[in-house]
Image 1 (cartoon, one colour):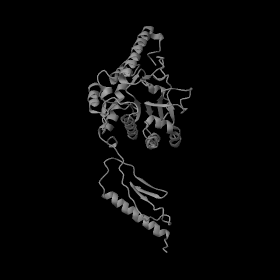
Image 2 (cartoon, one colour; image 1 turned 180 degrees about the vertical axis):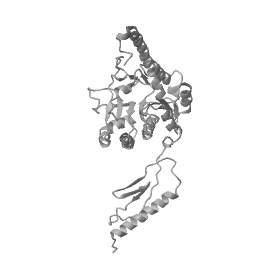
Image 3 (cartoon, rainbow, N blue to C red; image 1 turned 60 degrees about the vertical axis):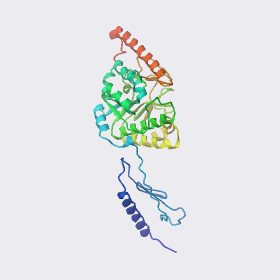
Image 4 (tube, one colour; image 1 turned 90 degrees about the vertical axis):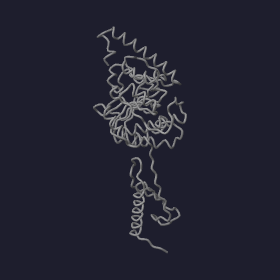
Length: 354
């Protein structure tokens, strides 16, 4: 019968660590940045990207009779660091390092489509035109990127290996995948030290919605229906079409766990998973999350058109580009009439100064 001392066990583990490190050094470099871990969890010893699994049949704790080392490079093209994005973020950032961003594809960026209406709204809104200097349009295909460059100075071509150019049907496989890629890009922006306002391109901006987000909020999300009067009551259903996130280690960790939770809900999009984990992750990471009242972030699920208050109007609860275009164009026409009437009222109106 063998007898092992603590020193023997320590020596064995040290030798294993050296072996694992040697293997890692001999491997080709990972094509993207990763997180180095060094911790012990139950029967698994994690060394860098190497995992040593203990043989459950071995009766000696800490001894390993079979060693499996797994080298996993979990990365995609959009996670690889490049020189363009940090520079683009620097150019677009406000004084507090906040940027505005939206995603678009060929169908939504085509002339006369949603991107044109989206940009037009900034020119017609109350003090929203200067916000265009802080807007980055992320294109997921070459045609959308080319079109963006024709109409806007801050464009980013997101490298993807899937064709997203056509209109994506809600909850189809490519739609869900695109939503999660969008989530990863948002996390990347936070990791680079920039806060952001994400807005869907089927949203028209009439006022600056940042003025309706408390300075203490880490994450603010729009919702289809706003119940009650407490924005910090998380028992509402999220709509990922508008998201504000403040750059901090807390929000980076929140986003990391949010994405990891995807595995527990296969086939679901990011806003569904957010609703499942928002309470737990807010508590775990100390993130102050809130929902924004539909009186300010309106949409067609719960349309609120008090033009003295409303900041944005989202073409949610509508299906298809043409229906969205028609309804949002109607909102723009009503907004123009409101502005004309407010201008006639002159100094007695506060409609154009809020």
